[in-house]
Image (cartoon, rainbow, N blue to C red; front, side, top):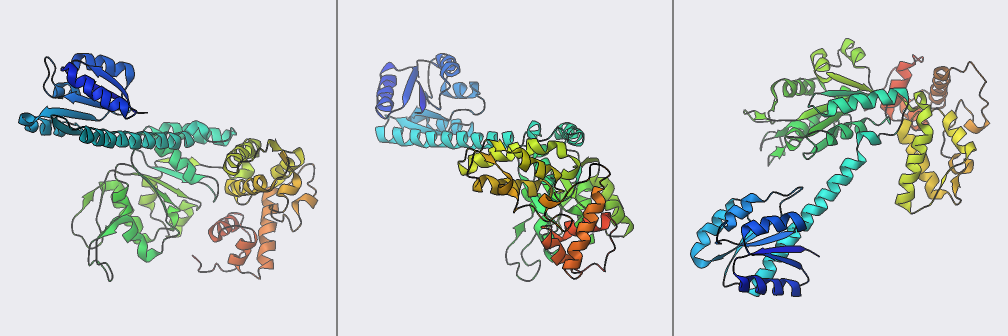
Length: 458
């Protein structure tokens, strides 16, 4: 039920409006002057205000200009006689929602109030969605209290308050986009757009038009112009995921954005100023890419003003119980389930697994387990089929030594076995392990496995 405040110095007019609005189901309050209206405004926080334009003392425009409510000001409808319509129009220019002419028509009053209430409901809904979004990406909500994650969270808190460029490093599935969103939604730019771009997923011949836009006729098929993602994220944040995969020419244009704060659409001779924060991420070793002439050194130093390193899940296994609990609660809510937790045997298996797909893979396993589980707790049988083969055998049949285990050697052996089974085809080996092609090669090269010639595979 919407709350309406009527401000008018004519008692009869106030009573008529109150009766009309009460009969329609609104909760209606009245005030005989602007001064009284301001006092009531603080007490009841109305959704919509109707105010007469000409009143003794404070007039309607002064009244409208005097109230400021957070998180939004209620729409104000001005009531006026025919002779002062120009003043009512002026009131709209100063922020009034609409105006009504006297003598008032009941149907017009109700239609106008209904429109104002609909506007308020949209504002409230948007604020609720924003709050839910901000709560979801609260930095304090980043799951995990391992030393490396605690360090990353502390850096996130500091950089969120500024517009400094940030480079997020980490393997595929470690949550780089989640961190980028958390930084944005805890920054002064939170009400502006956040646009995520997977640079590796856009073909080289399209990446520039996507990022910078183009003018009509810029190339064959460009019959109309298009706004690029940098312009679309103006005032907000653009997240360049897999920035190490950008082609050389695009890298030089990104450098210009960072240096000059402007972009130029393809086919245009004019530059457009943009106020965009850049957060970049990669699972590549950019310093190695610089040596190999695949990444610009000047761009590297521009994007790595602040660096956040996200550890792979195998290096933060003390966070696994907390992550598992978080995902169980998440998918309980999504699927309408009431799973209370996870059995010790299942949790032990999860902690012993190497998680090549990191948190993304863990979430997928728990999602399926919650969906399929028919008891109060997730058991070993609920997750066994989801975990990949480890060291050529099922992880549940693999006996770990009491000490002296070398996880990297085990992972290297697993990668080699997958490559052998795939007859040396890296794309097939990656698929066997549930990894992306790029992640497979990143792990392969990092572990210095004996590599066949790398395929030209995007």
